[in-house]
Length: 165
Image 1 (spheres, rainbow, N blue to C red):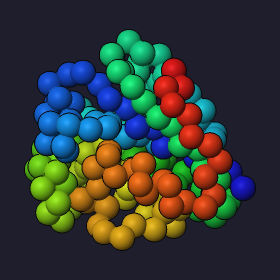
Image 2: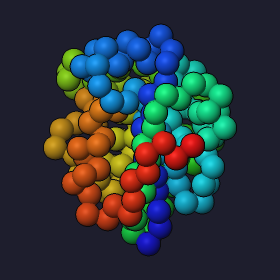
Image 3: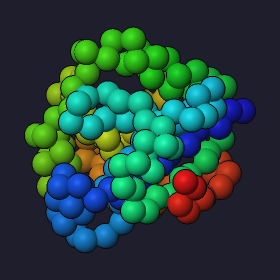
């Protein structure tokens, strides 16, 4: 068994305030994913595309609040996630952020363009495609505020840490 982490955070920039407002003035505005093999790297998407975040970057960039979910997955599931992350990491220029995907997710309209993501659709897609998390709806309509409910249904959840930084 291996451990993965889902980090939800709330930043205080313009884009985050927009997501916060559109998602009902609650919860989190950003989602990222970490693997046991890279404990201080969180993978996600922002307006620059596929990104690697660190806890220090989160502190510097004004994270107002965050919550981290640690979850155990089988070696097979972990390898699928690891492989997808490494493919994206190696071909970073081929993966893009999509404002249309963000708006569609906020409006709950399924829309997926190949190799175009926002933070929450990226995390949901990786977890769903690997078999780590079964979603009731398409990964393309997942927003950061959906994860607390999704993670509460996960049987292999190890821990929940509020404000780990």
